Length: 300
Image (tube, rainbow, N blue to C red; front, side):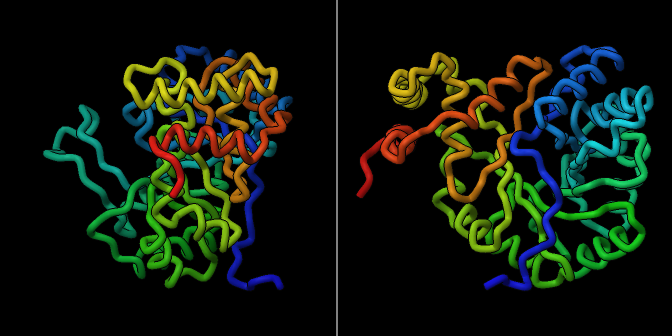
């Protein structure tokens, strides 16, 4: 039976192109357009951004590139985030890092994102981190206003726990469409705190940031990393696969919650690896071999 509370889902590509380190890629606008176009040819149409990425610079870098070829915008899903106020030379009056989910600040953040990205709407806006100071009713009212204006089509969160999503959903007309959380064989927290189960129940697809654990899976430096790396090597050998990276993405995408890996790279070759990972046929036993290695002990 179809549950009426299930949100009208936006279109997401199975692999999401993460732009957290976009500034560090040192691409010209034309080079970035080439990369985005090549990603589209691979079926990667969703781009993950945030107002704070690159010390408040990455949205504008992408926007400058899209201005060269504005026709690309219709083929993309632009995801951005708001809510974190960083210490920055651009905001010299700030004395500490803190979170702001007031109506005024969310709307201001969206307006800035639209201007920086050279677009008139965001496909999805995410709240970047849960806050101990959070007026869910005010946030919901703000979301309704932004949707009615056509400036944001869908809304989600990032790093939220189930009770925090439930609180906001209780005030929303249209339920949240995603929760972007850290998931990898190195970070199993969201498999254990009810988040993945809650999203599966509501047919909301998780986005997995840092799927390679910031390089800890590829270049392990401690006992845990080495233990997981060994399991990845074993599974790769069983699958006749040379790329450990592909095995990690396949592990994520095998899960029945339909996890969307956020792959942050300026190299088209690595995006190709992520796409090719969808072809790997990993067994349930192989999936658990990697999970148990991350867990550090056998299942009860």
